[in-house]
Length: 230
Image (cartoon, rainbow, N blue to C red; front, side, top):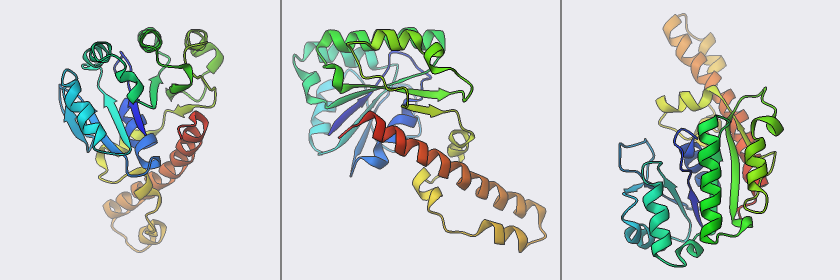
């Protein structure tokens, strides 16, 4: 299983898709981050997009691989796929995170068109709506994506990851969503066991984080099932 997460646009939440949606649900998945600007916090191997051969060699060392292509490298990555005829066939799926902002929509459509021009079949291109406001009307906010995806990519209106405070909190966490959810610490009991207000705040924060993580994990389980990567 080799999965590429990419979009010509930045700020679509590729790390959420790669690190939190895919990696925990694909057994023993190796995460390769193709990024040349700054470390993005992902615990994975980092390479420049122009080093396509090295990326492919590294990917072939593992049975299951997720390649997170940063926006600064996606053009190089695509050009190298063009130069290496048939290399797109080495990837089982391309997951395209999309958001409802106008620029990101435009760039996402360009991403879909480019993959189609390369010859990637429709069933191997998966769209995930990311950072969606719970009040958004999907058929309106993503109407251009829905139209552009016809005959090119698989669009499922249930492949949605909503905005959630948890994703900001994860920046301060050294644990995965799975680890947070499975933390069996009784924070409610700890809150009641101390009069120290600062300590209570810490326990309360941890409890709220676990509750948020539980809901997000359920959402991600559903999205993974919906996009049908198997």
